[in-house]
Amino acid sequence: MAINTAFQPAYTRGTSISVTTTSASATIPAGNSALYLLNTGSTLCYVRVAAAAAAATTAGFPVPVNIPIVIGKGVDDVIVSAITASSTTTLLVIPGDGIL
Image (cartoon, rainbow, N blue to C red; front, side, top):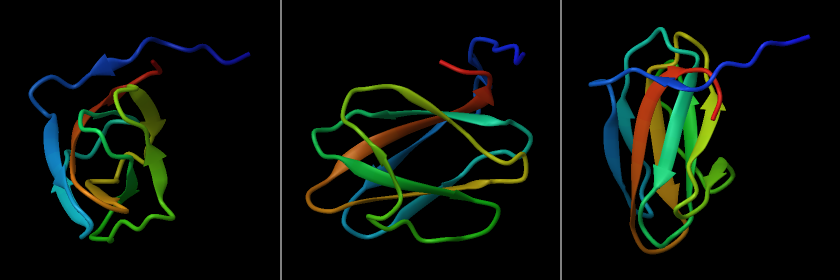
């Protein structure tokens, strides 16, 4: 049986990404196993998490508007890339451990 723990944010390590129709990225610290994502705009965006530079595409993981989600990541993943299909939005990214 798996034991789930509440999401524990890595305070002061969060960032935001201004997301447009061109892939944009931010660097996060290595070591955590999860990311809290919150799309604060009004347009769906898509993310890609990787250990090295990698462009996001609309085939990536969708992040809905105003619904906080937590996704797993590799401990060596340090790049979060995001893109929209149209318009712009802002994506808040906070590394940490656990689930929402």
